[in-house]
Amino acid sequence: MGLYPATLTVSMDEPAVRLSETVRRVPNERGHSEDRRFMTIQVIRQDAIAEYVEDLGFASDFPGESFMILADPRPGGDTVGEVLDMAIRRRWRRPMAVESGIEPPDLVNNWRRASEETRKIRNRVSVFGSQFKKQRD
View 1 (tube, rainbow, N blue to C red):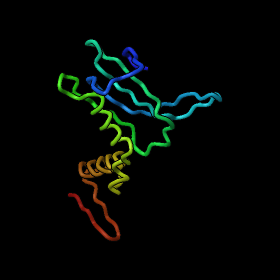
View 2 (cartoon, helix red, strand yellow):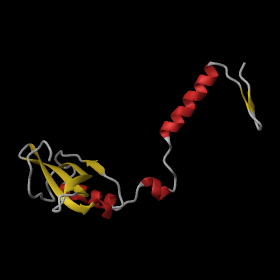
View 3 (cartoon, rainbow, N blue to C red):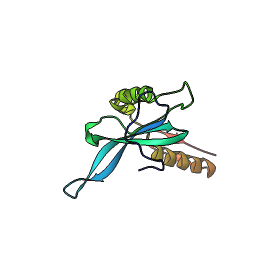
View 4 (cartoon, helix red, strand yellow):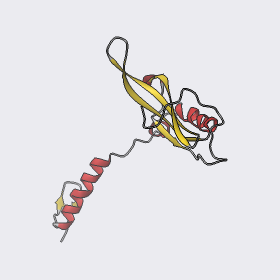
C-alpha cells in the first residue's frame, strides 16, 4: 500500500523506522465496504526501507485512536520489538479527552468569538445588556 517494497515477515530485533495503526475502508466478500484497523511497520533491510502491513480486525473493536510512532533506526536505536510494545500499550488506551473528562476546545467557535471581539474593539462598539455594560470610547 505504501511507496516501499513489501515484506511478509519482520523480526523483533530489526531496526524499526515507523509503526502506525490506521483505519482503512476495505471491501468485504459481499461487495460492501467496512472499516478495518491496519498496523504498518517500516523496517531497515539491506540499507533500504521495507514495509510490513497486518490487518488487526474491525476498527470498532479498538477503543484507541489511530496513531503513529516514529522510531530511531540507527544502530542501538529502536527495534521492532520495542516499538511493538509501545504500540500495544497505546492501542488499548482510550482517547485523552475521554480519559481526562475534559472536552476538547471548540477552536472554530473560539476563533469566531475572538474575531468578533477584536472587530468590536477596533470599531469602538459599545455593548449594553440587562446584566452588564461594556462601553468603549
